[in-house]
Image 1 (cartoon, helix red, strand yellow):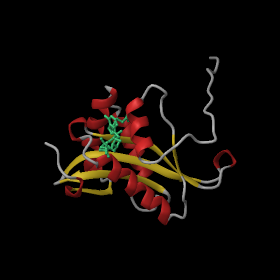
Image 2 (cartoon, rainbow, N blue to C red):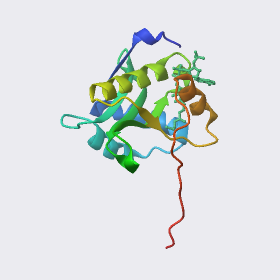
Image 3 (cartoon, protein in one colour):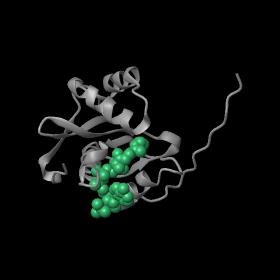
Image 4 (tube, rainbow, N blue to C red):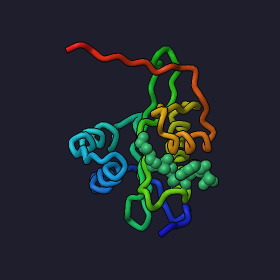
Amino acid sequence: MRQPPEAVAVRPARRGDLDRVIAIDAAVTGLPKRSYWLSVYRRYSGAGRVGRYFLVADSVGEVRGFIIGDVRDWEFGSPPCGWVFAIDVEPRFRVAGIGTRLLAAICANFRRAGVFKVRTILAHDNTLILSFFRSQGMMAAPFIPLEMDIEV
Ligand SMILES: CC(C)(COP(=O)(O)OP(=O)(O)OC[C@H]1O[C@@H](n2cnc3c(N)ncnc32)[C@H](O)[C@@H]1OP(=O)(O)O)[C@@H](O)C(=O)NCCC(=O)NCCS
């Protein structure tokens, strides 16, 4: 089942990839979220989406994983940087270098867009994604996420 990463091409997502993206996400989260994914596709794919990247890992025409991110300018006072807000690899094709290929590809896009820092955010208890990002060289950032409930 495992394939060497060189058998995988990373390319921009197409409309026809969405069913596979939704299935991979649903396998991880348990929620299909079709309308959410259609909305993400409209916002992050196609011509004219400057600084927005929705990439898939394609192995002989089958989507094995995806990554989504964008360039954010002066958010929280920070100089423009790349943000990764979603990455998923189909469970049976993991630990074969696909996640590494996806992150490298989006970072290449960020570099071409003129930004040289990449950020992400993750749940405290998601040790898998933490191990992955640490393996790629990512470390704690000088920001603290905060939240509160808004009274109804
Ligand atoms: C994190 C994820 C993207 C990694 O994809 P992948 O294709 O398996 O990653 P790679 O094969 O490129 O692994 C790169 C490194 O990550 C680390 N890593 C990956 N899977 C790991 C695991 N199960 N345990 C420990 N470390 C792991 C290793 O250091 C690995 O390097 P190595 O193979 O030389 O040891 C994948 O596991 C995934 O989709 N997980 C669910 C993601 C998720 O929760 N998404 C929702 C929030 S956005």
